[in-house]
Amino acid sequence: MDRDFSLPDGTHTVILGIGDTNGIMRGKRIPASHWDTICKQGNALSIAMLAIDMNCDVWDTPYVNFDNGYPDMHMFPLTKPVSVPWEAGVAICFGRAEGVDQKPVPIDPRNALIAQVDRARAMGFDIMCGTELEFYLLDPETGRPRDSGIDVYGLSRAAEMEHVLGPIRSQINECGVPIEQSNPEYAAGQVEVNIRYGDALQAADRVVLFKTLVKQLAVSQNYLATFMPKPFFEESGNGFHTHYSLWRDGQNMMSDGGKISATGKAFVAGLQKRMCEMSICCSGTVNGYRRRQPYTFCPINTAWGYDNRTVGLRVIEAHDPSHSSKVRVEKRDAGADANPYLLLAAEIAAGLDGIEQGLEPADPVLGNAYEEADATPLPTDLGTAIGLARGSDWLKGVLGDLLWELTCQQAEREQGFFEQQVTQVELDRYLRTF
Figure 1 (cartoon, rainbow, N blue to C red):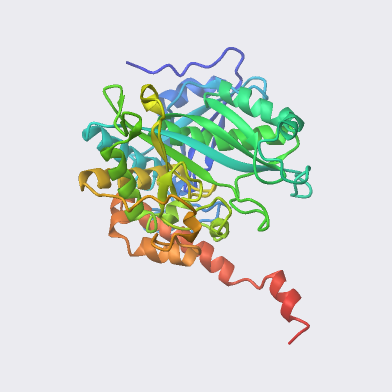
Figure 2 (figure 1 turned 90 degrees about the vertical axis):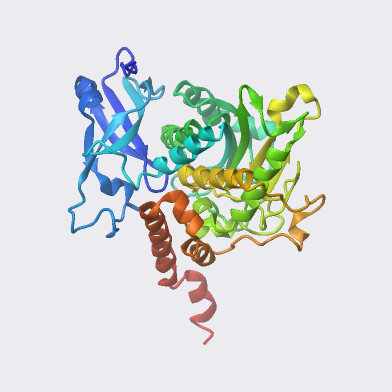
């Protein structure tokens, strides 16, 4: 059956976009008069969009390069266009990419997640995922918060920010991203928004759309929204937490009477085994690893535990067996800069491996995981994460050779860029002392 891509009444412009190398939504604005043609023939643009860094720099990659002339791919609509509440006459539509040969694009990160969702279904599971994203709302001129002090969960602070958080909850919800709640987080200007759980592929698509809509809506309210993992070293970092449950025939297979099931524990064990080597999918920037500090509510090791926010893998159980749908595993180490397709693909692959291989997790941590000596430390710098990714045949298999190479290359370019700088801190400390 053909999908309905009809436009809302009064639409004169359609935004059509897909997630790029970094999960940033990019695309084009299309006149409504041309929309029917786009639906049938697609919209041509360079595959380079899937091989650029966050600043739109290109480099020669094995799949797209100067030798092959950076050829085209096509975007097609994937969802029904919906009106953008803060832009009269403008609708937005999430898209999909395919090559001019009408085949999937090998470096499209969305395809890595599709492969794991298909794998889960072949195993008899529907993977459900909920996402939590933290970000800062800053003054666009100064790049600093407009408020001061910490007021986490503060309702007074929430009221002060309601002129922008209210539209984020209501208007982005109208755009097809179901928002459950928002709250001030553990720093001035920092907030968290929870997106309702859904099918894993849908969850990743929602994150890409959510981040671009937050940025656009923030501009309309004279704010700069940033998902940079650690914009201020002395303040709380921006995380990207993922919550997983496995379903079969309407039953949560992670639940055993409201407690974590053997299947759920095997999923945890798979995540524990691969957390370090998938770290590059949790953040591929130097800045992302500045979050990984003790006592910051960002995990520094692979420990797991029950309702414990010091661990990397937090298991949430249901005290009432009738609420078994609430049983899930939360993975807490990713930065808000993570590409959701790569992140979810790697996490799901690891969890499914745990089930297939019958793995058992280490003993749960009942206290402070920052002091847990037995847990494997997570990488705390990008160079270590790159080395683990380069040495991982497992990660190469999850992403595919071309996407794995592209992901590693981009991280190596970021590492190289920072190694070639003399920072202001160095000048302040050494210029006049040596």
